[in-house]
Image (cartoon, rainbow, N blue to C red; front, side, top):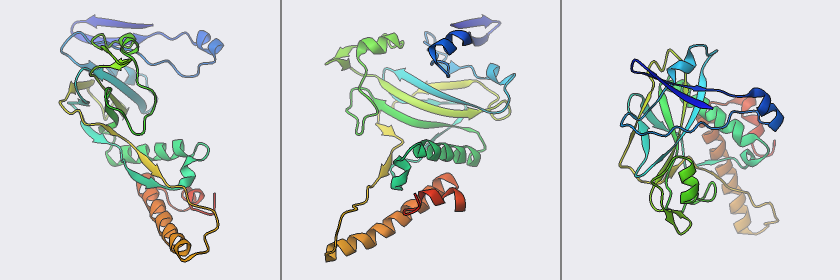
Length: 244
């Protein structure tokens, strides 16, 4: 249950979670909280959550807007690295989750925990490549609060989805998050490229050239992984080709 309280120009939310009901359902994490705005003040209260917080907190924000990308106005906006080649082994097991967590951790440290990061921004009517999932219908978007959504070939005529990720605490984020909808409608996503090596027989001259170039490419991928995560030595070793 999400309740909104307004007292003397103070706006804050209280989320009530039934932990016993969640345990019965086998749910470990709280479901997303939906916030619908009817005023010009486009913001999200976070300060209340820092009062009794034991250390920094992570918050992932999805916004649905009629026109373009959303960004914060009172904190610096940054983008996660994208369109880079990573070692093939990151696709195995839970490796990618580990890699992305390390990448995010490093960005937060380098920015002194004073930025809000863009991870995804996409106009809903544009076909994505690759797609993270099927496009939502206008009716489905309506249930998320986008009452202005219109059915269009089973999808949506207009509209933009933005995903933001922030790690915050009381010292580095003394103000609530304030947003604005921009005119930027360019598709963008944090995207990582994995090349799968050919492992068959290639005894010809072209095969030898491929093997030589493959070794160079894999070396560059390891260097990229190191620069994005800050890993060296033992942390990086499991991602080196031939050691997985």
